[in-house]
Image (tube, rainbow, N blue to C red):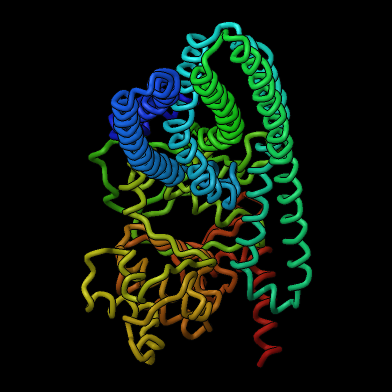
Length: 578
């Protein structure tokens, strides 16, 4: 994992090196202070040498200032390097998600991806900062203090032969136990985020079905599970602290007891005992810091694994075989014995041996029951999914020959479940084309019949759309998305039941406007109402992943039982309504 994450430190490696050097200098200068204090007691005070005491005191002040400068430098470098590393790692992860196909995204929940981009990355950048400070400082202090203690008294240093192995054993036991809990903790965080995300996105449904109590209970269960997992994970850390305190206390008592006898018997100077006592405290404190960092690293390893899973995920759809110079010149479409399934291990095909040829500029209606694979069929054209077998061609070329940018620039797709972004109506429309003029916006909205409601809004095209388009109706949202697609001037326009929320009269006006505005574009219209497609050049009837029948309205009325039954049922519904 270190090998995979190391490239994201680029641009901050000098800061990391500077932070490490500052931490080392800070530790060394701090550890020279006890020896200076020992000299003041054993030499200056013992001999009554005031000048010596003042000189040593000045030396301690300079050492303290140097240690302070090292500490400030280490903190500054660590903060900048940690935040920079986190920003680059987050950017790389986000860009990787943007490269994913729909199939890749389905490997992770949305809530999990959000947690990995925020919580997990934050944990990694804190880990880098802590490692630059504590994981460098603690070993340096440990080794330096141990060497200084050994130079003072080899015999008294034997107490560390007991305390250091005990602390090491405790660290190993805690890390072994706590690792799996930290992995479970991140999963529990994903689950809580998932509940929050679902409830906020579907708040209208929750309220309309009066399910607030049920959702509160679901959130409470997930939240309690997160709490229990966190308590188990951090419970080991809490237990470890008294153990460390006990070992440190026992070591200090042993040093006082044995060292006191040495001083009393003249085997050791009192100043040396004071210095040894300080070094012993530094040694034990360093061991405690190392153990805490090790436990923090255990959690960071769990986070790093989750981040690397995203970075290592191979996008299923790439531009590997694409010709960068190729663009979509016309909207002809060809399916040649196409098979498709969403999951490789699935037994049944979602699309089963589909062969189809559509000339450029044609208007094609697509009908079929729920689950008949209508959306699946059109999703293969802009390569939102990749055909499992067979070939899909656009403009006379295999869709794999185009870069995804070129292919999707030549296509525009309006979904039944439309998405608008936070911003003004004009900003949302310009998602179709950044350089569209105000006049082009108005023309596109006129074709999509969106001008009917935009002109009634106080701020017109500058009216702000709330997140997800929550302040406009379903029909208004659909018409804005159709206008956005028209602005793209695509060679292929796909309308996936995108007029389901508008009345039949408005639907007819939109279709008439599309014929005049985009006369050369191929239009694929998925619809539930036959009236939406009955004047199409070609109507395709889908049934269970296969093409059941193709033809004009008149031809299908004669030879397609499915089409005839749908038409008759809809006509009867119209008669009853009338």
